[in-house]
Image (cartoon, rainbow, N blue to C red; front, side, top):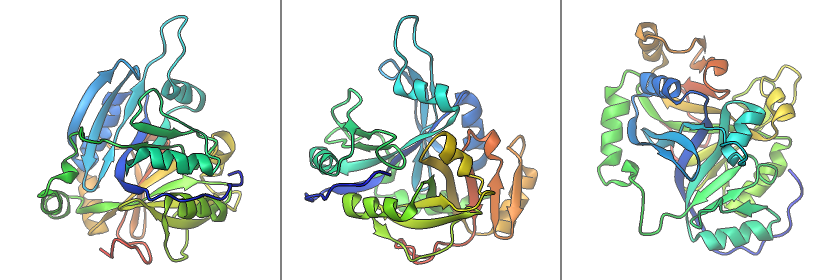
Length: 307
């Protein structure tokens, strides 16, 4: 990432992860994967004329994933940024989106830090350009028109524990972290801490072979792993070289990895997976270039507490 100017900080509150946005070439297939593995609550599925795409919003425990299938433009028209991205780089996660209070204050903070932003034609949104931050970030201020997000319901924590942790065969606890490949994890962490008020976790090993990383918690409860390839065999090195700094993985914490293995042994038509001790990785070639991982262990010094 390029150097940042000093920032005069206004008070800005970044909230929950609004959604992780995988761009896919087959929304039905993506839904089959997420539903077959996680049993999410689907709170939205529709076509947007403004964005020229079909998408669904899937709530999985404490997080939300929005698989999106963008469509090519009509003859003579320009494709949306989503379509241009998938056309250039293929299916993969496009951005991380967060709720925010006082979007204008955050926009000013980002501008003061030298970050290029746009609202994408929707005044309540802030998008950073992919070359400005790692990864592309979206911030959304819902105001009085908060979308249907069940995580804000008073009963949600109890329901989440009962449904996913205690009732679901995965024993799913929460999203552990999102992995972002970066060129310099120290420099990128400084941006997250000084501009986005993120909290650094204690130093620990990267979840990616052949990488070094800094883990930061951004907003209310989302941890991002800023992973820098340092070895030739690092599996996300090619992402950095061909796409740039981008999301490469999403890791979820489960209660008992042995129970997950038994569950997967009975599941039908899920992508192939591999196990390494207390961890399971799904074949990212079959999951739209995002490495979905299940682990039993919590991150060191996780501000959200151990599980």
